Length: 96
Image (cartoon, rainbow, N blue to C red; front, side, top):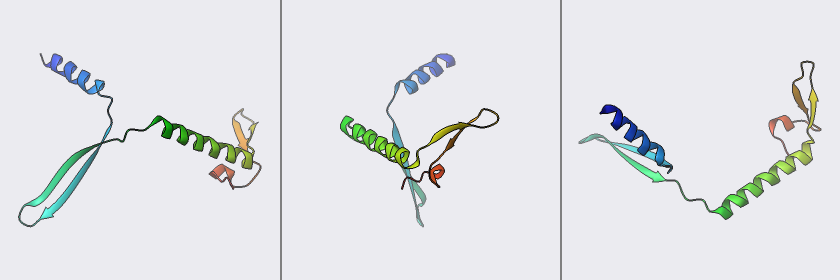
């Protein structure tokens, strides 16, 4: 019987694809001691247009970096791929 309860609990937990954030706030009172409240905040719903704009901005940043740094692949003595950049600091994400 315990196995059935465990399987039912796993099914219920795995079927919920909703993501939420747990926020716990604690305060101290000299009369009541430590008092904590826990709340669950739903993640905001992302619109498709916002996701597309974010993707465009990410792509633009990558293209800007590639135009500035001009990465080229080379192989070392053991056959490992190494990137060589046209400017200093590009290995740290510099793009200007």
